[in-house]
Length: 165
Image 1 (cartoon, rainbow, N blue to C red):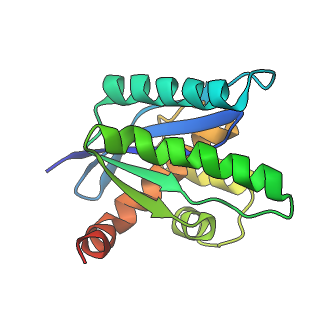
Image 2 (image 1 turned 90 degrees about the vertical axis):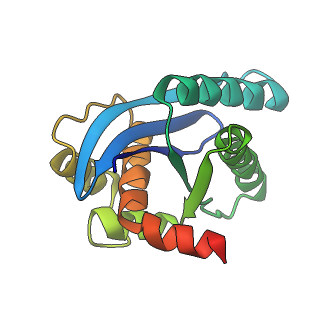
């Protein structure tokens, strides 16, 4: 049975999304894009913008499942906190629609897609293009979101079992 997966790469300034259909072992590119917020807006307005953009994308794509990349913790506590708030929106938007949401560490996404947990953006883009030959995305955030979706397609059975426990 085919399943539509929406991968989300959360960010306060730009949140990438990538949609694929998995039918058995076959993956088909459905779409990708970026929801952007205005850096000069208040934090609450920026989060509202991300929420509205993601809910519109969810309504358009109609995914069966969603996957979100976990937060990378940096030395800048303020930046990490803001990224965490954007990630909260990325988890909330699909959950509010009753869509199950899985979470994946950045290194697992890279290892699943590229084969190495410390792959760079260029390697991710190349492998996403190899796995989804018709994929078009205008931003690195969208390619990263497609990588999250591919990771979920590979690990969704174990994620479902983990969430059921």
